[in-house]
Image (cartoon, rainbow, N blue to C red; front, top):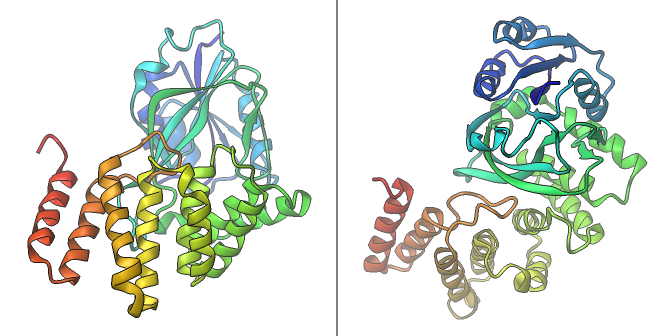
Length: 354
């Protein structure tokens, strides 16, 4: 029996399929690719990289395709990747010490750095996702499918890169995900995770009003302990601000501030929110809003980076907060602290090896 197999579903991924396969090939015993209807040469490229390629008739159901791909594997463990992902580091955990040939009773949760290129975004947004699956695990959900069958999750040091949320790749995917989410919501209208995912689809496409509505619905339905709560709250704050719903954003911030004392992302979004309040009500800016802006971004630097938080954006606990403080002091005509924070931002952006 195979110990570890790479398992993928793909369609028209010629620009990226080789990158994904090459990143995984040294660390797995088999590479299984299930193609759902490519017309761009993806299958030939995957075969050339050593993958076992099969075809599958797409049924508008990601879980069904995932399960069909897993059915092709005889492995004790399956590493699930998408074609727009690649392994960046932490591969020691793929060895038999962590993943023994006899299998296991946990799903390996790994870090994925989502590289962004939209205006106003920097660095990568971190998500933690279960992608190392023991034999017998299957997926549920037409879209943003989730593995089921094993309840225990274990965070492992494997780290993925992902560029599926860049502007070009979003345009290539079109409205596919949104259409599938709408179909799922017809079946499960009270599922907060589906509303959260639909909100993100609107947000990355700059549909502020629609994103705010969907985030608000996700917040209404989601229990306080859902694993994506941090990302939900931070992204909702940003969406409500962008939609001009400042009162709702302030109410959410007040309700959640006690839950995220060690989140640079929460305090970063809080600073942005109060800066927008200062812009909208300049007569209250100096007395009420700008002191909170300043203290929020300083708090980000005190906390530092927190990559263990799902949905965190690299830089908010370091150079992005320092840059914002530099611009903040420049706007106030305070040249000395502005210069100091510009220097700090450059130092933090360069990293410790510079």
